[in-house]
Length: 242
Ligand SMILES: Cc1cc2nc3c(=O)[nH]c(=O)nc-3n(C[C@H](O)[C@H](O)[C@H](O)COP(=O)(O)O)c2cc1C
Image (tube, rainbow, N blue to C red; front, side):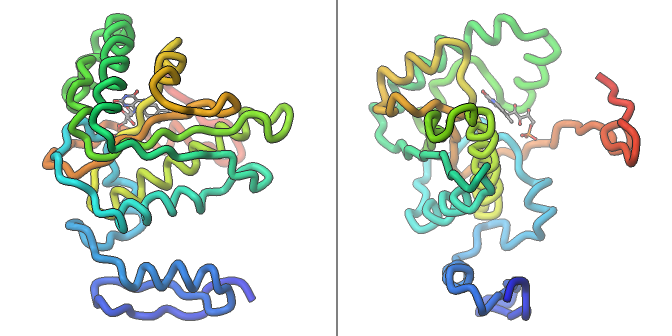
């Protein structure tokens, strides 16, 4: 039988977990939540987690506990994927020398990208900690290279890419729920090739994004979102303001 059959209070009275007893794999997931040490933000309401997630570009150097990192990565594995192909691969990078080599590449490419940004875009990103200088990334404790396999099924590249972004979002939200900051990072034109010279990414994989994760003291104001009314249309297309 599918679905939630009961709501159980867990050992820690701050939160409740929806439990399905009929699916052992779900029960297993629930058990690991039972043992979960709550992050500094505590267990947040689902929508609160969504709205609190910010792209963070200022991190503390504190390590992330292995068990915490595993939960975050596991959240990625539970994302939906086209045909349930699960085309993703997550390469976790913690080695400082690797990070140094990658940060050097990122700085080179992001200098070019930033020089092409409209001034208002650069100003907005800078106000939230964005910078073309990527040396700060060397101190970010965990990087995740999220890639997707291209050749599983012909003509499926877009679906594989989209599926991997679902997994990336799960990872970003799980990091938020754990009280960690994160930022997705996409590569500029030609940058993937340079990154491949440093990392052993298989030929049949493409990089969807890098994800940076770490503790942060940054208190970031949420950047403005489009209005609901101009973004959503019921039985009509919304009037989308550019
Ligand atoms: C597909 C994608 C690519 C992104 N690439 C970068 C990036 O290369 N560097 C970066 O600092 N932030 C990157 N971001 C983060 C965005 O700048 C950020 O999501 C946006 O400004 C909204 O801010 P918020 O995430 O705090 O809500 C990316 C986000 C997405 C979804």
